[in-house]
Length: 287
Image 1 (cartoon, rainbow, N blue to C red):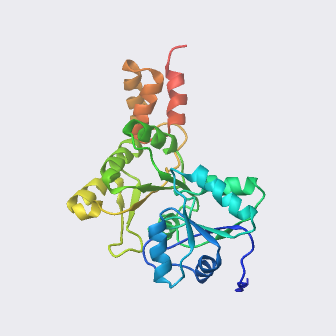
Image 2 (tube, rainbow, N blue to C red):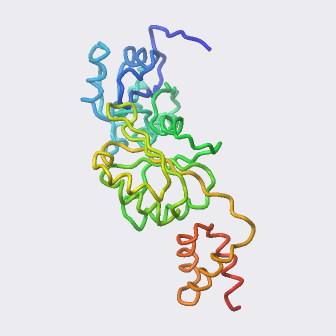
Image 3 (cartoon, helix red, strand yellow):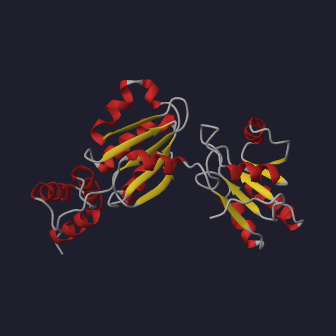
């Protein structure tokens, strides 16, 4: 452990976490890096300029680096590093490269032989996980699910059998359809946690079953506003073999549907893992 910071930064790309809501959620080290770096690469230079002004950090050489210009901006940053300068990378909020721009830049900088240094801090997914009360020792951070309903359901079906806590980001205009798909694919028994507007003025944390989730969101339209971290408890370990009801459902579906489609639908209805259903379906189909 150490708490030193020299007055001259070494030539490197510093990946700097910034607040996700409350401006006081920034580390002293992050403030040092922002003050001492030669250049700051920012997702939105106006947003970063406001952060710098709040902490009385003098005007910097700000360059724009966002999802639409990252490849070109990366070349500029690599050129600055080649001249021996230091560059800080920030996103609009939280930790860069985590469902935010920056991964291409980091990869390019490393490939060019320059040093990349993390400056850790705020992250919405970990903040939400820490207060969720979901007790699995493992989690999968997925980020944003696909926009299109069919693609979103396919991704959820691929995740359905995982026993770890699942962590998603979701936008307010898609939260209802996202939860509807979670219910359709995962069933109604799992626990869901809505961590909304974390560290902001209207922060709220709600935990309920998936069966109750849509009703809770629809009870007050304000609950559908803001930025969401959505956490879902993992799949429950299935007992060996299918229960009688799951066998009955699968057998009925196999009468009218192709095997793959019957298994997918049976998984949605029963909540049983697709692999187990598929193996049982193979034993029922005539050779």
